[in-house]
Length: 280
Length: 170
Image 1 (cartoon, chains in turn green, orange):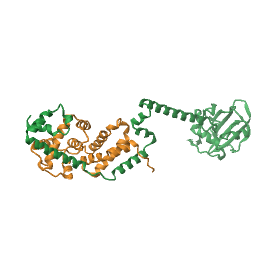
Image 2: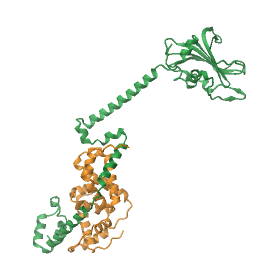
Image 3: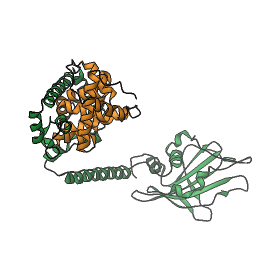
Image 4: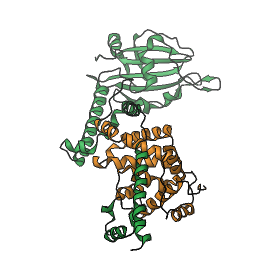
């Protein structure tokens, strides 16, 4: 072995175990014993390496660094959402719980499904609780009846020339169908008196009770109609049908519109109807 | 805000490795403030990705790799010295090194002049915490490449610290 080859090997001799098979270490050692120049070089390099290593390792670490790191990590932990806390549990600790990661994943999925089912069931329960019959059906309709005492409910309406017309929502009977109210049928929007009273008529049934309560709601322009905010017993004549008696008609006005709501039953029954949590 | 104590494993990792990581960071970047920042970033990343640590015995290599990645992101556009300079240094190093006093700042300046791919293995080598194989894995290069870089890097350091080597150009 010549000096050049030996010096390359000697450069890396600090970890001789890792060099087996890459250099002929025995030959290098033999060369070192016979070559004083290389031996001196090796001593010098080792001394140099030791000095460099000492200098590198002697770099002082700031005293506060450890506390600073732990504080920052603790703050970081505190700010992380609870859902992600499981992510920081190391795998070996999870394994120590006795479950394989695959089983843990299925447990997590099952837990998520259980929570979702519980939320759906809760939602179903909340929806099935007694409540004001129209609330969940049509917000405008519910507002008209439920807060009838004020008589004024803001409505969007559109104008057709000089004639006030009905809010467009009143022309869509599908919005009035739901678990608590069923619109039996509704008329097309009609002119009660030619070009004077534009109206929409809904025949409905309040459902979800001991017995369905039939009724009818007429929305028409106010012209020539006396508004009466108090319910009064009356009868209501459905055009082309038998007169219906024994009910209550409630009328109220809003802006240029008048509402007539007829529900079969007594005034007391009607007042109970408005109570959100009571059934007839 | 109330502080939750950090996870026991994280605390243990900090206790066992923060000093070495800080020194590694300092020797990589040459600035105490930046080294503290890099160490902190390393542990924050470790906290986020702790579930990736399958074997705690490999935590040291894992943390060093995170730190190096953060450092490389910072210096991605940093100019590096040319290979020719290191080759020149290797040629000059055939002679015996002089007796010298090694100053920490001078050592740092010499390290800073080296490209990162030479600096990292040198630092890891001198810390005596990593085998050649671990350095190779850490750097993502072959074992022979690590040995070559170590040899040339050490030659350069010897020359630079004994004022023989020319100041490398960027």
